[in-house]
Length: 304
Image (tube, rainbow, N blue to C red; front, side, top):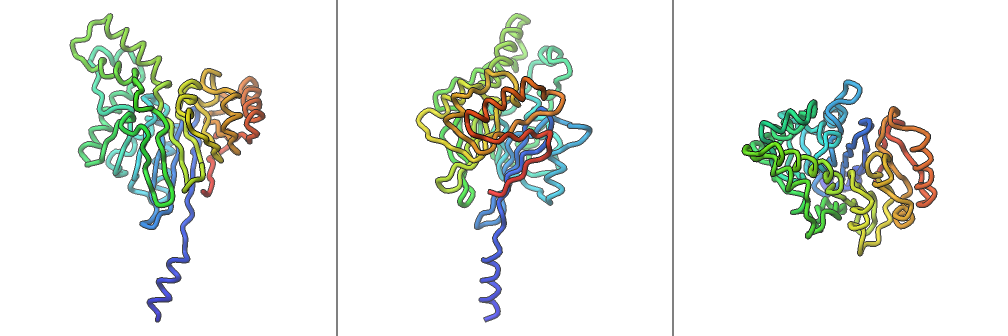
């Protein structure tokens, strides 16, 4: 009798799933803590920059919550303000499965000086070595096209890339790994790689059963987002606005009228926030009947 009561009490204790968008400055970092019949699962979408105000926000959040394993790690595209925070996870946080635009990158020696202080490509190589040596399952973004990752009642669907996406940023990143690169070829490949990283950003939709909970667009352009939404009817409760609310190439009132998120999250710091941005975001919120949240106001935590 006592054991039956104990089991019944245990079933009544339901963990609350949470969505956390961390304040990491002009960068992106989202942590999903999803309650499933098999326990809590941790999903991380982008890791923010390497440091923010001298802190390591992602690592501090995970260790503060007693989380030592990420079930699914996603890097939307190859930019430091989305990848940098991942380098602190090495030898501290285990990763079961990881999605990135491509696998390991080890550029030709002549390429690195061109990046100047952007040493994150060396760190990208080191991080992928860690993932490979630790036995994490590695998937490229294109392998996830139209795929759903399931966590109990929750599903994380890859809306972009599409199966026929060219992923030019990846093609030219791989070209930069050729040790026999000429200077002319390097400049050509580097220019196109930089130009196309954002448009190749992966886009993800979090759902619970048939309910659209949150849309994460990385730094995708408005054109890319429209391609991802084609054939879908999506009305998420929350949308993480692309490219930190900077540059109208990345969003439009037209798309916001379709999505109509209750909360529009802008991942930006106070330094990059200005009146022009406020005017632009106000117009987007009016189009989608949304409320804006800027991450410099603090971490956003929502029970889902």
